[in-house]
Length: 203
Image (tube, rainbow, N blue to C red):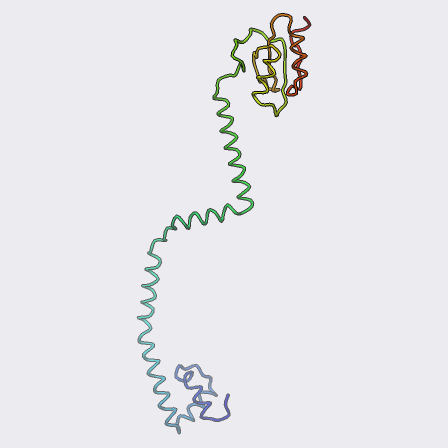
């Protein structure tokens, strides 16, 4: 606090006007006001400001209440398409969400492929000839073998596809007459074949 009594009283005037001083400070201000016209005028100005503020206070409170009611009554703004896509993209960039989304896409693709395979008619022949009534050779091809490799191997053996693939990815072939052993030999030498064995016993 300044050492000069006038400066002390002048600084305490706003608190004196609002009744917020203790007894010692209030006595200091009152003693000074008794002999200082300048501080008396300043106190009068403080009182006018206080009265004006108190008169305005209800309107201010009412204005804030009205504004708050308008804000609360206003419906929340719907996000635009751009904001929605941006939020969705930010969500996808999270590692856990990205992994789940990838797994779901893979599952849908696998289900679509399985449905397409199940909806196709049973494949009983790769060649144009009629299927024989019974099979006498079982053949398993390499996983990387293409359909053209299967056709070529079966046609080269002189046999006809009877059925397949089985659950073990095996194909059943019929070779007429006494050509079974020769057909098995040709199939076993084929690079696309991993197994070729008779299934109807020795000739």
